[in-house]
Length: 125
Image (cartoon, rainbow, N blue to C red; front, side, top):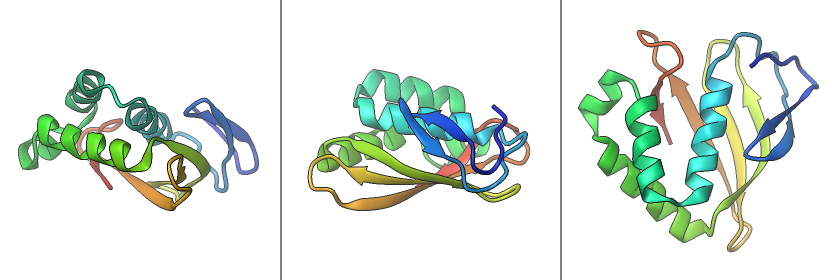
């Protein structure tokens, strides 16, 4: 996915304005998919997504099953999320600002790419 500052991209089914240049940042699509998986709440799909999109190093540190438990807990507590904004710092993490559907609280999700495995998530939180 390639976007320029000021353009809208589809993120979790919503048009979101990109604040910084994101040319050739493959983590935008992966970050978007992570939010969609979090929002959907299907534990089987969450685990499948994590297994295929986390780097080898990330999976060695914490299994996809353990990380899926964190996503389910976040989904249960928030009632799902709505994307407010997304920011990408050149060669840095994707920052996705979200608002919970349950109580309107806001949070930021950071998605870090794996240097040794482009297009894979090294960490998120």
